[in-house]
Length: 518
Image (tube, rainbow, N blue to C red; front, side, top):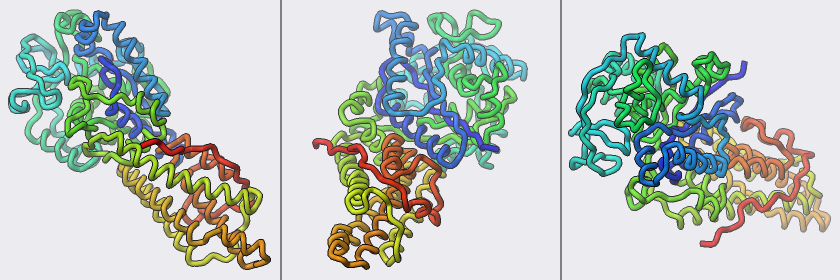
């Protein structure tokens, strides 16, 4: 039976166009999903748009639009970015219009209420509209929201509350036993510390007046709408059709081996505490993993629409191409920490690693096989020390990349893959096929045999690279495999990396990685 998995990127507010931070999370999630698929797992990748927030309403008022007009307009920008980044999502769910979500959110509320976990009371607190979150005074920095650097507004109203406090012990055990794995460990420790400090019940609704009439209605109370985070978190199961007994829900959530959320550090609490507690209350399975990334910064400050320092990823894709943007985000940025953006570094890394590294290697492998053996990969003769060294690197890079991705470390995985790019280019220089060909033309049988061995191992290494880079660069990965006469397939074991190479036909590849102007 085929193993199944669910993985999601968070659904962003659509109060403005997407920025580079959204692109980072999209390509991370896509790389993880494609990596799982390369191991034979049937993966469902979900993303969408969080449309029922007060900040969307306020942005619409500033733009002189209705909330519906604003979200409809901005959703298109996010879909275009996903497609422009070659993200292989199964569904894009919209929380203000999709029937699965509107029904599912209310059904989960009703289940939590039936469990005795929803009650009403008056509440006063400090609310940041940017975060759509209440803060205690102790959580503020100089009296301001730590995320958006603005003073939260005091709010006093009667809301419904969720008995989060009831789930402190089950959540603590789930995190500490690894039933819910939070990656990296520092974030897991952060969640555990927050739970151990004591969980307070949380407000889960807003008055219809304060929400400006925008949002999903609380069942049986037309004066209240669901708090946007409570509504939004349910998208993960709603998109799979759980409320209507959908087959996707059973296959990719209830029966899945893994249920993974990829999230930014600013929304960790919602995904590792609030959401699992809601699921336990509603009698549904919890996520198995929450993978937490940092922020892309500019001069050390988080990229943010609210802060006005956002970088438009669509412009970067138009200027440099999708492969340059995907590779830079995955190879240059830590999967877990913050990293400063630099356009100059994007260009330098692309030229060094892709144009001069992998692209040059593919060109050498195909052009020399076409020139010296009419495009047909010869059988190998006797292997020597250079081939043994290359075989060790194939083994180490395949194992190292797999190990890194098991820990959701795309940067380390690509580092290990590029060890093989460099070693294979060095192998070509060591064997010098052009010299062997010249000697073979002069009648040297040993040189001809050595040329066959070199081309055989060279094409095999490039084939392995085509497979290894495919989760990160799906377009180039497929093009590399096509150029060496192969098709996308799971990463072959290191012991089998030479299997089936002899007799394959190579072709001239497209210019995958033209150099960028600095």
